[in-house]
Image (cartoon, rainbow, N blue to C red; front, top):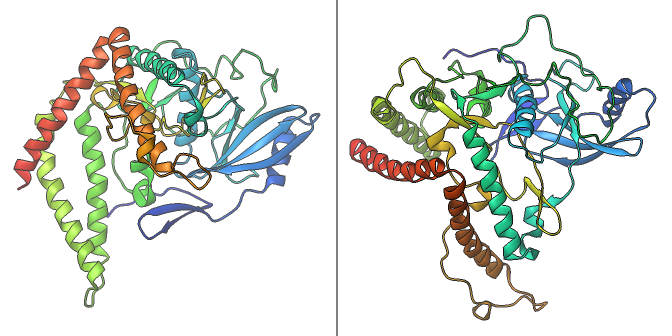
Length: 422
């Protein structure tokens, strides 16, 4: 099986009980981080404090004189491309959809620096995670928030792109002349309204370049090393074919690495699962052209999709007004049939009857139980999904048409595949 050479210093993949997880083999040194920023701003007072750890990054508060910024030090899961795509995406979204997103102050898209990892410094956004405030917000505030997300979705839908992949300012290939060193733009740190990126660094007017895809399925574990096409994809069929190829290679790897001696029960189960999955993939591939007919020489239209608009990544003020949308890493331009769907915080099981508090046990403190709040949340989200669709009908009827058509096609394709796979 042919593999690519990708340098990922500081990263190891560890198999847990149920899944594969990335792990830091080298901890970023806060003192080196401080020295790096100090070298960009020698006359400023710098203070770096560890804030949190995400799935793919470590997050620090960076205090520069009296202003606080956020620095994310990034695991090299998809070196260069993940950083460059995130920087480009945030820039484009802030100017296209007029969303409250962090402004990129400066960044380093190569791990060959004193910190040892790629990094991004952004403005620190106000607000608290929606998850923390959900229970205390009025339902009318939640309706207003959902309507605001409908406006955002309609704006991105109107700004359709060409091809499937991630956004870049320029063609998404590594430059042999080397990567630019980080610098602190003139006028920053300052909470000004202008973008800290220079005019040369802004994406040019018009459609951005859709290039190589950056998504978890394409870089998780050994996937980054596999020799598969990573885009830009001209069609849904090409995109899904590459995804299936990665799954195929996973299954083949399981079979190739089975013990030569008698198999344990778990090994037998893994082998059976791998063979069955390979059989399913083999039957699915010939069906793709009928599900996704070729579009000639034209690239399929796509829409930028933030597929993790969860209540953790949405910051709101105490009154429920939207303050910021975070986590723009791995945000791709995807086909419209995939893009036209509810934001993540509106997904969940349907609940059509409002829960009656009298039917739930109270906590020892006399407060409502977590189960009650969970069911109330499901009920409210069920209502809010209708609010979202109704608002989209008035803002962008074409989005709603694709949404309903995609639901029907998913059901039809599921039935068709089920019949073929028997």
